[in-house]
Length: 220
Image (tube, rainbow, N blue to C red; front, top):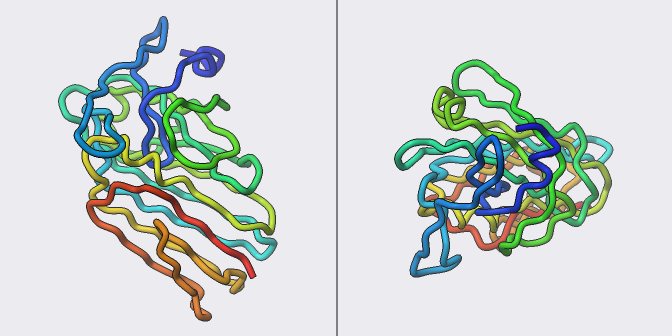
């Protein structure tokens, strides 16, 4: 499937920074969704997110470099998927966006700018489609790395709310904030406020979380 086909696909289930769809070489087909008796009331029952490590590095000019490492575990056979990754507001579009499978070596995967999905996931300024082969994802044991940069000096946001649409809770969510130039006044993770108090590095962790919000970096 080429980038032009990806851009025409409808949107499906959202995850931490990702939206998942089933796809075939001819068309995109939304399936694999099932109702659950709690918010968000629907999940992709075929794939769970057992671990995410999110590293946010604040540069001297205020730019934020994002590295999101995801570990997925399938329930049954892995299907091909188109994953849509939302770029959080209030900053502008992402630069240097790229995705790689990293479980066994490093293999770039195709990406293309996409369109917003239909499920609630918070504020975002654009989205990117990522083509994931089920065979390749299995070969790399479910490890996917997404990286990009957002420039500017305003507050920074990263979407977490969409993570509730994976099967079950997120097993472990680790957030590493690197602020070597002490530009941050506050970090907000899922509504909890943390003051750096001069620290150049913050390590935060949540277990078995159904995210309802996101990560916000507030600048001085």
